[in-house]
Length: 319
Ligand code: SF4
Image 1 (cartoon, rainbow, N blue to C red):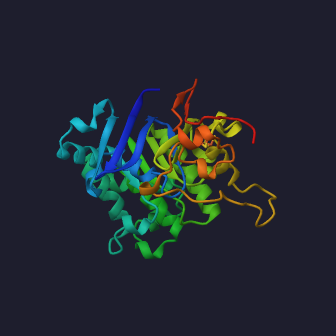
Image 2: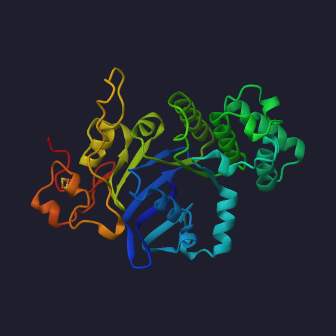
Image 3: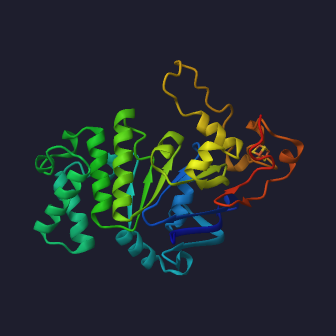
């Protein structure tokens, strides 16, 4: 599959602080790629680097390249990058209220995207909005277009934000924890709808999440980040069947299973270190059950495998 978005060995710093170290991943059209890790692992920063937003937080790519549809983002002017983000990239944020205007009716907010980016007339934009809302399984879409945001539930509001992200016919959607604020049943519905809509339309989706359950549900590939480095990346099926990296295995172990006793989910002991205090060697070693002296002293190299990559001195070993 040809990559629409390709990060090739990128490192990112803010001032003298190195935050991301040699990350490579790609997203193709019609493909859903999960970017996973706990808070502080570098997921959002990776997404910002991918679409040229690092200057907003004083960051910069210090190594490697980011290509969108074959074009080197670093070679573009800021005006070109802004235009690209506006016309070809859609965003779905965690909190729909940050994306919705509380004093504008729902229909107008979705219409404006296709009028602006596709040059549609008012009538055509409204028809497109109604079609999108129906595909997002919003009941009574004809009435919802006249509603105000505060009249909708959290799940409905998030569907509207997804409709807005799709309305301009983007090539790429970046969804940052799009269902974290919703209850579990609604989460599952929205993730499924989002996944099927992007595949149907050939849109590339980079899905940022801390939840491997969401990845299992909808993603084709997954990139697991830990403390600013790639731990493991590859197709979802093989990684879930046999995770090579202990951190990937631990994240998969955090997915609640049917019939599990309440309180039996333990999580991963310890916390992601801050960038100012990354440990020597493998950054996961203080939390890793497989850690050896080699791990404590020498950072693991990224090893490319048949369908993915892993950075671990003892990949896939039993604990
Ligand atoms: S390199 Fe060592 S410490 Fe790091 S994840 Fe692999 S086994 Fe654990």
